[in-house]
Image (cartoon, one colour):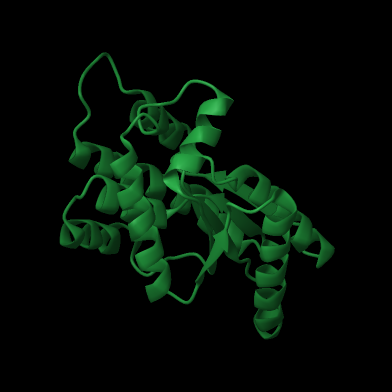
Length: 213
């Protein structure tokens, strides 16, 4: 039995951490208990080092947008090859805090890097590897950033302007419309309501996976 790869996506303050716990609980209730948790960027020593540079910068040297993009893919392939693929092959289900959709939205939408350049890089690095299911937690940027600020100091990504996050949200929603494996969840609702949305979507999706388990 091979495992499945489920990813939680969303803007800052969308509630990804709570959603990840909800997904794990639902999987456990369906007798899927061998779980592997990952985050991006990060998840391996090299990827975590790159995460620190991406999030915080290094020695006051400006990090260019293209360098940021390349670091994200370097961190991602380290995680995929060294953690995610071995876990899936061993039959574990992987729950990811972000994956490639984040790059499409943040660097493609937010940074406005060339779509063809990003798509070419994605194809060369990832091939046809992608999540089996992505849950995108949709929240208005202003609400999400307010939630993020309440948690404490913002990192270099979180300090970007409101229009930056508005472009990200627009790209997320556009990509979700084009991919049936991406489910959109209204994350402006109460925690109980968001939990119910996840429950409905995940339960329905699991029912379609029975034959392939």
